Length: 493
Ligand SMILES: Cc1cc2nc3c(=O)[nH]c(=O)nc-3n(C[C@H](O)[C@H](O)[C@H](O)COP(=O)(O)OP(=O)(O)OC[C@H]3O[C@@H](n4cnc5c(N)ncnc54)[C@H](O)[C@@H]3O)c2cc1C
Figure (cartoon, rainbow, N blue to C red):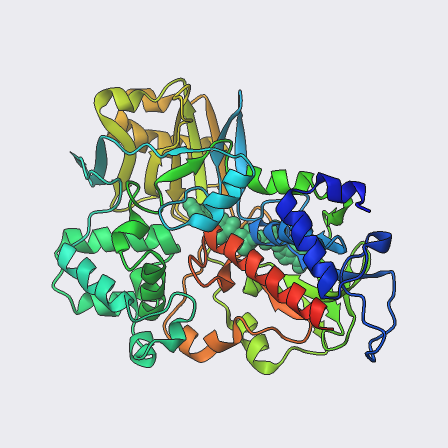
């Protein structure tokens, strides 16, 4: 007989549930699926206070894992989230009248099929980023407007082709396995660029693009890592950097945080907010204890869907194996981004043939862009700003940026109707970076410890993805892979 829950599941989920039952999972008695042990095995006695899976982190990765567990018929799980909201590194400002502006994760592009499919399944629409028109470059008193055609930084084609070719040999999910990994990992992107014949303009193009994508300078970014990210983008740097045809091409109607919120709505009390996991005990035993400020959760499998640098803040008893502990300890932390929002009555710059993008060679602004809603009902300029170069006091920050926008876009920029500011490095302790800027020698020394599970701990979160690690797409892929690992382990017991 089907339970009410089963009636509500789509047919493919019902089939998967039947399959899992047949493999050896328990009847769904007491709301606990899977995890029952065939009587002939010397399995530990079943305890009803023990969940099959505990997921740490209510970002895209953890919530994808939660959704997939349910689709597979597993109801015995909980999501433990440190913040009082879901979405992790996706967070959207509410500008009123249904308009949002993304403070964190924002765009997707070609090849990012995992997040695109998930959004479609959740009936969240997408629309094209606005990039038509001229980008304004500012240098000292000079102002130059240029139509770049693709909405990305301008870079030397020959050098880009070389990088694309080199990226073919560097697997995105395991850069340390590249045949010449040691040689490539000794260099920073800056070292390598210094060996190329680059004009000043080309150098600025690379500096801007690396700073925007990785939150660091070419001198601090490992070449091996850079190539692995280009590999994710189908070995095409333009796909990584452009709006048109690139990773910045598409936005979500209502913002990407809506993906997490929509999943969370279906989870009810399986998601526990404001519950940071502080300590994990017995990861090497059949039942693991997760200590939170709101009590202890016991589970057979644990999916850690969070940044490896934040895993390091959790106490493990017994201590983790040295390789994994070192990876967490040395994971490059604290490369957060700061994004601001100016709202205007209309996107007035479009009337002058401008696309809202401003690239100054120095100063507090790294890059601004048109972030208006699909119907252009209000004008929105978002910006990435240089950490430490813009005061935090809202009026001063708004005024300094408004003056830059006025020079580039026109006087109307002096009078925004709203201003918002989100500095991921100061707002709370639960984000370490946007896309981790791996320094030279990190992957070859520590990479092999990133993914292998440790006892009952399964590592997830975007950083562990095989494709598009660091991006929202990678988060979804990592969540899906972690669920397969958990279900496999549960059905094997
Ligand atoms: C400014 C910025 C811009 C970005 N732009 C883009 C973009 O345009 N396109 C793109 O694809 N990606 C972008 N990203 C990256 C993207 O947002 C992330 O890759 C993705 O959201 C990561 O999802 P995740 O679930 O792996 O991790 P997270 O979103 O970090 O989720 C992890 C969750 O774990 C929680 N947590 C942490 N520690 C604990 C603990 N001890 N106990 C319980 N919970 C804990 C956190 O609160 C968080 O909710 C951007 C990120 C930032 C910050």
